[in-house]
Amino acid sequence: MFHTIFYVPLYNALIWLTTLFGGSIGLAVIGLTLVVKLILSPLSYSSIKSQIEQKKLQPLIEDLKKKYPDQKEQSKKMMELYKEHKTSPFAGCLLILLQLPVIIALYHVFLSGAVTNPADLYAFVRAPKVIHTMFLWVNMGSRSIVLAILAGLSQFLQMQWSPAMQSMPQAAGTDPQAKMAATMTNSMKYTMPIMIAFFGYAVPGAVALYWIVSNIFMIIQERIIVINQR
Image 1: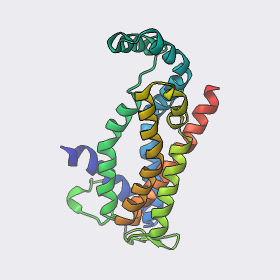
Image 2 (image 1 turned 180 degrees about the vertical axis):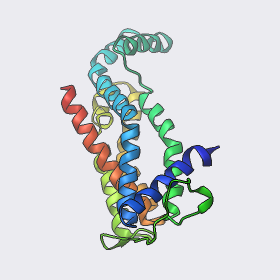
Image 3 (image 1 turned 30 degrees about the vertical axis):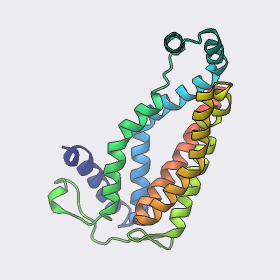
């Protein structure tokens, strides 16, 4: 089911884009990444908007923690506050869960390097006559230290400028649990990019290019939403 619903459509899209761009794997990967991000942008918009709203609610949340020391009552009042302001603390988690099968499918698609498999091709998709794996002097089918570093750097910038990350210092307040959560989140700002960089070097350049384009798209999308919410 995963193969039919997620992998095959994305695989055909990559092959079609590779043909459209004259056999360029690099341009096809960029094109497919942008298409996927645009399709998922309504979910991303909802998640980012929710993060911005939660940042605005931090003073009210701190007041609730002081007013209701009982954890059960505190949680109830917080959920009422979120409901009143039409936001949810689980919006970001939902976005990640919904994107996960797409990311896994894209990973396998990019690993294929646009090597055509007639059994998975739709009847209306024509395989490229020539495939160019070189893009900006980098072989998309091989590991690239340059793309791996850029993937890690773009991940750091995306996390650094994300509304969720910027709201963490305010969210911590005097609550020990919140402080611990803020510390763990801030540490992820450095560990996650390093992990992405190592991962980006362990896989073909096409996968690392996907992360770079995806992170740049997210940075631009977040900046636009933040500006519009002011």
